[in-house]
Image (cartoon, rainbow, N blue to C red):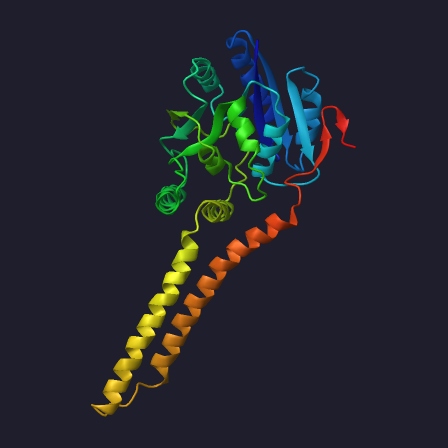
Length: 312
C-alpha cells in the first residue's frame, strides 16, 4: 500500500481548514489502496487555526506542525517536506484554489513511473486584479530571461512528487528559499497539468501586492546573478560617457571658446549619477544581505507543537 503525504501551509485560515478537510475526504476515498497523511503547518496564526488543527488531529490521517511564530510559507513547505513520511509527497493551499480532485490524476500519472513530479500551472487569472496579472506576466518574462533555471509561467506550489525527488530537495538547505525555483533546479522529469483560476472558498488572501513584489525579488536574487552584472555594466557605461563629455568640454572651450554650461546641467548630472550609484549599491546590498542571513546559520523554522504535544 502506497502512502501519500499532503503538506498544507496555514496562516490565519480558520474559515477554510474544515472545508478543505471535507473535500479531501472525498478525494482520499477515490484513490484506492493508499494511505494518506495530511500535514497542516500552522505558521504562527493569530486566529483559531491551531485550535481547529488540534481537533482535526483526532483523525488518524491528520498531523500538524505549529511554529513558534510566523516564519513564512517557504519555511512551512520546508518543514512539511522534512516531516512527511509518504512514498509520494504533495503540496496544496488550504483555500481550495488548488482543486483537490486533481490529486487523483497526479497519483495515476506517478504510478505509471515515467514522471517524478506532477505539477500544476494556471492558464487563466480570472478574478485577479488586472494590474496584478500584468506584473505577474512581466515577472515570469524577466526571471526567465536572466535565470538559467526556468520558472514556468503560472506555476503553482500545488504538485505531487516522488520520495526520491523530495529527498533531493531536502539536500538544498539554504535559509532564503524559493521553492518553485528549487523544484526546477533539482531536475527530475515533471508533467504539467493546466487548470483555470479558482476563487478562494472563504477568507481573504494573505498575499498583498507588496508581499508578492518582495517575494519576486527573493526569487531573482536566489536564482540569478544578472543584477550584479547590470551594476557593473552601469559603472563601465558611465565611465565611458564621462570620458566623452570631458573631451567635448575641452574641445568646446579651447577651440571654440564656448564656456561650460551653468550649475543646472551639472546638478542634473550629479543627481543622475548619484541615483545610479545608489541603485547599484542597493543591488549589491541585496546579495550581501542574503549572504549575511545564510552565514548566521539560523534555523529555517522553530516548531513549538505537533499533534504529539509540545516540542521538547
